[in-house]
Length: 216
Ligand code: ADP
Image (cartoon, rainbow, N blue to C red):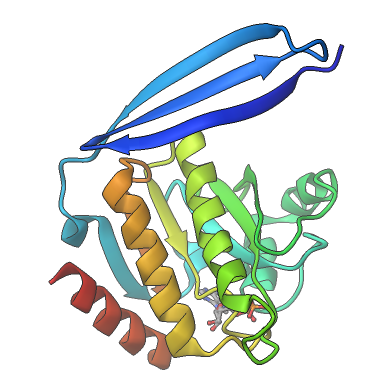
């Protein structure tokens, strides 16, 4: 008998999220039912979204997010920087994950990083905009936030996913990221704080503007 897991309902009501998990056996028998009640953060968005400029590998947060590729075996850009800073045990754990499809996310330990965890997500390669790139980028942010919440992580820092080697237009990526994160925070208490960590001046300017617009 191989148990499967089905998420049957996720519902926002005022300031609470009801989260139901029901496990079935292969015969359809209910083995367990787990209902969690998550309280919303009382803090406003302006206290829960931060923009900084610099190297994400230096941040002391519960999780930094890696803009990985589907192999999860390291690469250039922020991916390379994270693997160099975390050390070889990160690559060893990633090998055991067996890759990650575009838009999804996987979590590992942070090893030599100050961050306790790394959440690896695979952004879309920009192909002109008519290949579902925006939807996939939204999925990256949403799936990462969901994983962070499931692991009870309070502080999470994102790089500007897909805006380097994957060539996603910076302004559109920024608008997408800020919207998804703000929507998530308005309906969930975890993570409590999200940091947008920008490496270059253009991204920093875009994020300061868009975050300012959304929290004002
Ligand atoms: P992708 O393949 O998803 O485009 P890249 O790593 O090439 O990933 O670029 C994603 C973003 O990460 C870019 O905006 C790049 O400037 C930024 N970046 C590169 N190195 C770092 C770093 N050490 N800390 C934070 N951001 C970084």
